[in-house]
Length: 271
Image (cartoon, rainbow, N blue to C red; front, side, top):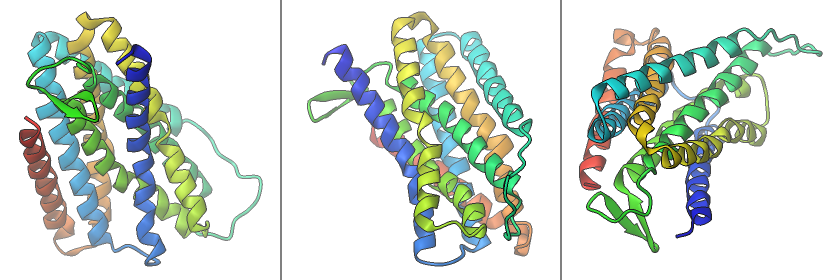
């Protein structure tokens, strides 16, 4: 393939993973409310998926490409990047021009969409970094429609698409509670995923141009995703499970286990 075709492929995959956030709104077309138990399981799945992608995919590939110090520095940089993004969104003061009859705080709506939109950027970066070996034949590649796709890229892209579903649900819950039409909620959920193809292309261009920084890049993507697990996804699952029997821990742990096992199985399947 030509370099332009490679970029278009990476952009298309990043766009598809971003559009998956819209799937998180689909349950609200069938029911008015989603049970806290189901939401806890979904967040658990997201945690398990992210841990699999980070540890067994990105960190493992980074260590195969370079030394632990480079991967570790990249990991720390990824954590600091998302931490800075969180503080940026949290520092925004929002005052709506018009009052709303909803019991949902308008600032909560803005922060929810804003935080998850910024969070889709490191997920896109993870997709782009995983495509670093695009076009290189080898046992780590899979033939698909004339392309030799890196197995890691397939693994990360599938995983990010799946974990975008609970992210879309997280956006949908306060917007639906505020009385927004379902199709508009889909639009906002999809909007939150639009940075992913941008991040994917940027990361792909970067890692293929400066190959010596490839271990650092894998570590960066892993650190950003692990930060999401520890600071965002896991606390979200705990919060939704606080009113359940056992405080929702069985559902959360079960979801994490299913996410881990399924993604490890996918990684082994892809070689």
